[in-house]
Length: 467
Image (cartoon, rainbow, N blue to C red; front, side, top):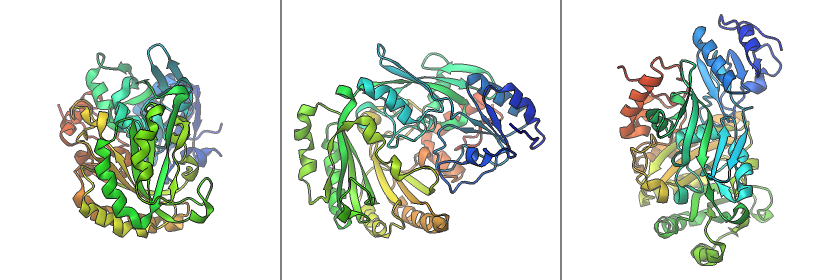
């Protein structure tokens, strides 16, 4: 491994102290190592410390502090704003720390911070269990958890943060603690939604839930012609509160992928779709799913029995790493008629086949948690909305960004206030403060206690309150 001195830091010393590898701009692996999921982000860090264990993380933090280096922390690298890398920073890369340990007696799973949700599902679904996560198996465990964690299982079992039992954390001074309800409880509160502001989590312990024999669920998409969008949205908003919490479904405006299992005659057709997931008793499935099967004139009814891991990973092939992404997000208490009018204007303008709009439900068990019980504040019910312009071609970056911005600008007046930090780009302090609402000041005080010098600032940054 060739090393160089960058920004005045003797990286050869760090290279010798790590069990993992140190990658610098002089190395052939540098461009691959600095790449993130969103290819619209192009940052050139000073070096990348690919840590093998917690001791490597401690070493890297102490080295960065000693030499005055900015720190970026990379888990799965999925974040919209690409905060896993930063110009001239020392990237503390956790991507090789991916072990999982399932405890069948206590129904828990311990997960290293470089793991993806595909790693977790592989470990747990074989035993008929799962932890609430998101909607893509390639998403990193760390980033999704620290921002909240909305997914298929949230209506029944709560958010990912509601199922976090403990976290091992390297703090800004290089010390190491375990945070849970009794040890560092204020830090534990902040980690459940407050992002990467308070330290580097090196492992998580989650509660697991039984989701059926061999982890089998009933799920899949039901797709309607785009012209039916208003009718579908009105039906969806009225039906949803009455559904049992074992059934969840997110709604999207999309282009039908040009690939099996979709019928070839529908490839490339714009559609309004709902992707459903049912985790209740299968002998009740026909009764529970009847209203869904019977509504409207669907183009596709793709409901079938499958492992939860198959549903969780179904869209990964459509969204590999390296696409151009531009995200905008809001929470919505209701899907109002005014909002539907906006969706009707911008749905037909989907600029590329990958671009889409999604509404993810945040109700049921997730809405029964008090707003101040965790750092994640949005517990009023409704939906987390995201508009994403996506395309593989950098030449279309302006096109997809403008569509998403225009769509969001018109839709935003119908929103409930605040936004989901996991879907936010680099949007400034006002948006960050709004995302945390009444929890922001408490987060700032905890930040002041655990990271008073704002060492962990490459994130949706909560500035430390001055003591």
